[in-house]
Image 1: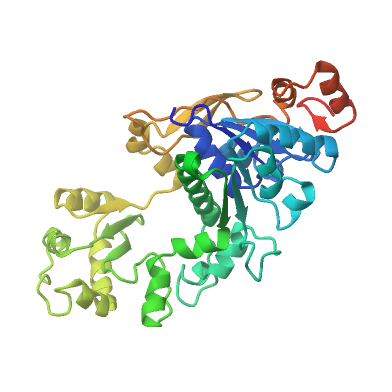
Image 2 (image 1 turned 180 degrees about the horizontal axis):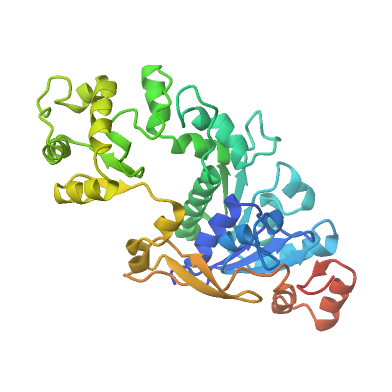
Length: 396
């Protein structure tokens, strides 16, 4: 594993930070997840399998859980000791909280001079909104995506999953890897990733269309602002087919496949003309696709080399032959649930997909183990448990 020997102290919770540390753990880093005595909030997010949150299970494999009360000096000393033995710290406290707890960059850099410290913030420490709490919904609302998605005139549409949390986690893990690469030359590094900046950055050409033209994007539903046809069409059996005609080769192939004599029609002969005459062309294509079932069109367009796909329900997507062959869907043995499915690391390293080493941890499952590794005596460990400074799974 590429990051074997790298230790990450994970002080994060919710999604963006845990996604970043999950990716680093999948690449072989050892992840020590420090949780408050009430646990990561996602442990309480429905639905549950047994007593475990599926949400938590989805983003916390390859981690050891240590439950510590950071409001106490003894708890902060545990984190300082962990920092001395770590290469990376990742946190997503609200502004000022890390400083108040004594686990901020300046404090932990005194413990480890070449520490890589990554802060994931809602808006960034220099933002006028720096002290506001920020969850993915809040950032989706502020970024413009909720009124750039969906049908014109309809209500705001939330992307069905926490897209910007995940993108911020990906950016954080990328930045950490870059810092690790240059660590010997640079020493310590403080990385700050803004959820809001990550969101606006990821909107890419949608934002740039406005910046360079001054035109706010229309809401195209499942269509595309810059390419036509590039959308889904309902078929005779009620199913939908997505068709992506991104160049003139595919346009000619589509016309031939559908038997349409419009390839060189002056309204449609180039993509700019098709965008200009979108409504006429889409109406024509909708009528054609409604005449036959989805499977008919899928076979025909595949034979004609036109990019097309069925619009799947999630169960259809997760049973697709590609996923069966790719190895993205795997298993890990959980401490109480037995064998559970996981979505594995989405890349191959020398042709091999990294496999989970540890299952998502029970709350405080590794507290005693990690304390012992740090040199705490048995008497000290028992005293910390007895006084409620730390917790171990199964203890109250």
